[in-house]
Length: 214
Image 1 (cartoon, rainbow, N blue to C red):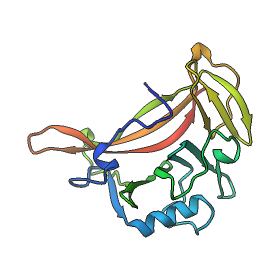
Image 2: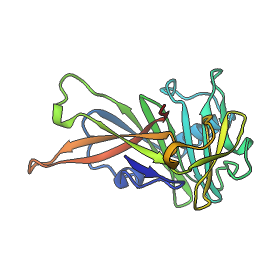
Image 3: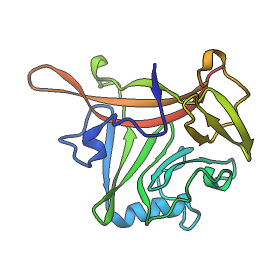
Image 4: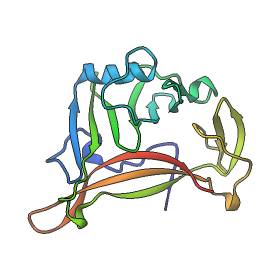
């Protein structure tokens, strides 16, 4: 189990850079052009209708020039951003957005800045009975940094670490944590491909969930 701080670990460099040699097993990847990306961002900000294939998406993580902003989708289908609860999270704007992930158990949209425009991709689960056992997607869980709760507001929790790092996460948490370990786990799904030489490697990754362990 790995530690996951305020900045994303580059779990899938090829995907983040928008270059995928071929579709890995267990998923389908659709490229998004600039106008698609603007529509997804507009949905997050409440300025555009809900896109197709987004029903299961529950969480969002935006990397902006001024820091990181988390978001969650409430039962009514509206997005709530940590920037509305705590000033430490920057307001998400297209002018300052560097990378955005909107995700849930079935799929993830990844948007990144490509020079002056946005580019992106939609990754959807496509595991079938024909998928070989050694090529099935697998999960890793990353521990978010923070050893105590500083404040809770509007369903968000401001976490603080021993080193003084802070972030506002979209879950309600309680007090100090046993052994100083945050109970939040960021679930990451990895997708594989077999090479001609027989080697199997990860060629795509996505965020899948934000869990609270007991």
